[in-house]
Image 1 (cartoon, rainbow, N blue to C red):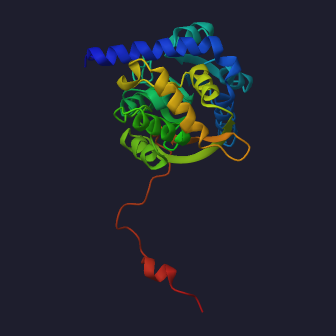
Image 2 (image 1 turned 180 degrees about the horizontal axis):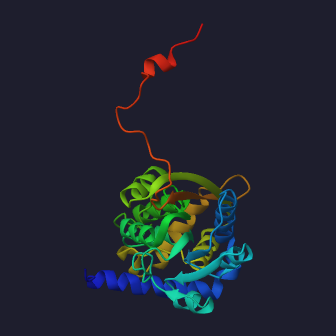
Image 3 (image 1 turned 45 degrees about the vertical axis):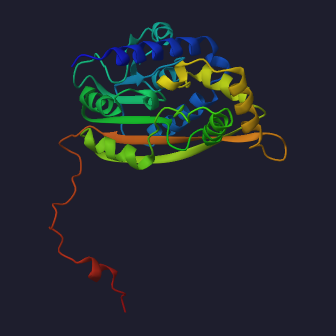
Length: 287
């Protein structure tokens, strides 16, 4: 299905922002490092080996290098040209994967899925490029992320007489993550969350981190110039949320997805109605 002009523009803008982040990434990579460590911990807990992985959203290549250090062959991909080129990978978005079905036995993604235009479609494509009984691991910022920033932006809109805009990209929560995995056809889907708190002395340091990580917004409302009056108001509203030490504690709430491509040897849930013992009997106290 062909894309509309706004969708093409969104894809192009996302690429530009990834390329801008590539120049600054080393100074703002703390969230990526945190997500990579979480993914590697989860991977190391899986009692099987993998031969060929897709690192989806490769960024600076640290995760890909860690996978290769574990003896896994890695193909890299990124929606930003600079990241993809530096890693010798493929330039593509997560919802437009150019790989053949059953190409990998592991797909791993540290960030990126939070800003995909078509997340259900992306998950379906990821499941298709996995071999039967292949593993999908992903972590990305989800619902609850940047609560202080969102509150400050709403306050600034109201203080300057502007309409209240949804300036943050729509965010997926843990429950929705599990539902999306099931809809995409994954087996044994698990969605859980973790949080990272970061303290900021001012909103402009937070803005710099978001630009450096490629996490600035893609919504149409953010494409209009921001006035000096609005920036002054949002900075003041953010500062009003500071703790006694003058710093604001901002949160990154991460959604962690684990799922398997359906395979013939996977355990299956029991057929509905096949139980031989009632729940009431199972919960009955024993003498």
